[in-house]
Image (cartoon, rainbow, N blue to C red; front, side, top):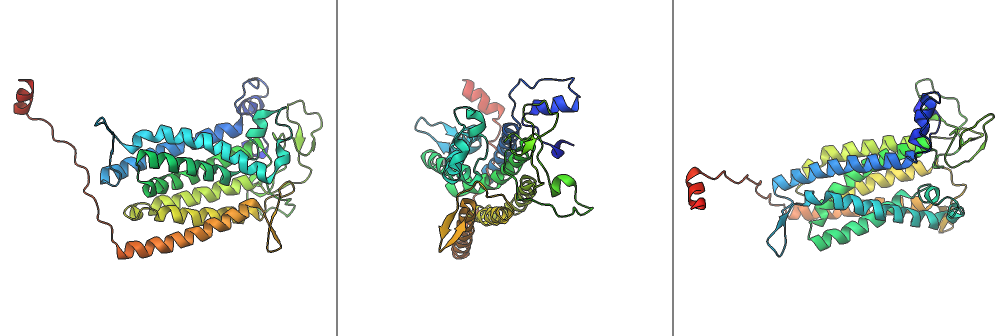
Length: 338
């Protein structure tokens, strides 16, 4: 079972399941990066489909340039992915450094491992969001609609990326869990020792000849799996209500803020904090993610309440659905040719 141990690289899995017959471990296809890339690709497909749906309804008009060229927002999805990838990684590392600077002590020895281990999801979301805000403003894209679409796709991408955290064993696990496992819960969802984790934490595995030969001495909660399940549930909630809120731009984003805040705050209660700096507010220590979660919940509640009142007083006028251009008649073709 792939989730009962760690595979820092995708090629480690091929080597393991083949009994050593397929040895491609020299190829650096890291599991975390692989699943993050999968998350980006899935999100890009869904963003494109949702943009085209709103464009067909007339809610996302074409962008017009000085030379008369028209461009649909759905044609810019490639730009969105690149912006999210670059600023997401930069923001994730910035926030992670602020909370856990010691995790970068080995940067010059293993730059790739330092950059792509222990990333802050909130840091990536905030910095990528700001970059997309500036990009959308410069392109004259309807920002509330854009953030509605990107928010509900972002949560799915995060969930898929969390599978990468679980498979690679990047240290993003929970507190010790030695309670007896209920019979109806699979082992990989109850507790894990993260054998062969890429973070190289724990004790040595006797007789191991792999590159990563560490295993935790005590089983811990597999919090990345819980986050995958939570993010998937939130995605489907937002997916099923999005059509009802198409004519109320911004509401879906604020609902997303409430749900992701609740999701992350809840998971932080069983996540390990041994290497995390606490921020003290009124004498009580909070993790960085907890403070951001509470801010998101509060902002989301205020946003939903404010926009609900606004749209109740100013009902949106539905734009006419875009009609396909009529096919030219034979007579028009003759006239044009002449």
